[in-house]
Length: 402
Image (cartoon, helix red, strand yellow):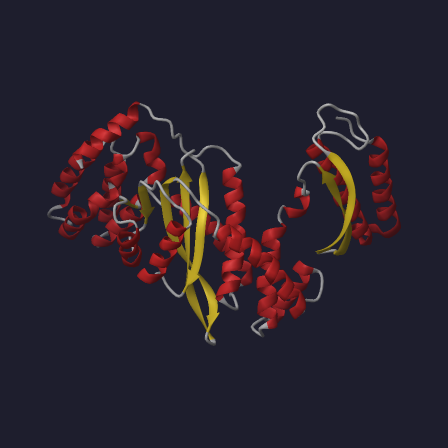
């Protein structure tokens, strides 16, 4: 497939003329030209042929253009969307990055319209949107985003071997005051070893009823084949897991367990010793070795930290469930650190909004960020090798020892 030099020359001339005539004020014209050119290049790649080119590799045919006005930071852009026949096509350059930006604009716009904004928020709105926001625009943007995001949150699932659960808190206006509301997030590892964001939910707290409703929604959407759930220790979550997934083993996050263990000793130097002891236990090569280490640690701290020893004996088995599974999987299923990284990205992207005018606004922006992470995961590398090997047999032996 060859490019069209005349088309490229025309684009270059348009860009040069825009910059020569208007300087940086010509950015609108320049951006229109670049986006229109990029969309035509994408169409040629999708068709595997340029316009009028005769090629056996051609996948379809050009079918004219459809005008579209796109609001941007430099104003309204008049674009020509290439149409095709015989192959489905929509330019990715228009979709990439727009989804989360639209959600952020909407969150800030809602704050502005609800009367909870400040001069700073107003300035941010103008900077991000490049135009004045009115209620009609907000309603239209809300409808467009909510339909797409609802489809993502309610899509059918399927077979997922591992499930990781976690929660973060965002500031949301509720009944005339500002409160911290819980955002529940679930991601899973499917039968092919790829990670996927499975869902999210915003509610008043991490109470058992919120977690139970969230887990039941995953179940109703077709989540099957679950073999392990990993999360931090939380009474509401554990109660919900017992109710919805009673037969699925639970792995308590080893990282958080190590942190919790240090709360049972008062002296700083003992905390460091306890952290080292927990690390040795969790880095054991087998369940038998880990159980031996637990006994040794119990003896070592019996006199100088009896409360820690009691806690260790009562809770340690919850952190050793991962030994039932292949050794090559344990490092990535023994903690909820993957969810923590997702949470950090959500916090980073929602920090600009400061607080949300309602639950729907918070859920909208969180969903936008999660969709981007989800798409990065499913188009990226395999996260876990799901082929069976010799270490699977070792895992079965460890399971018998539990």
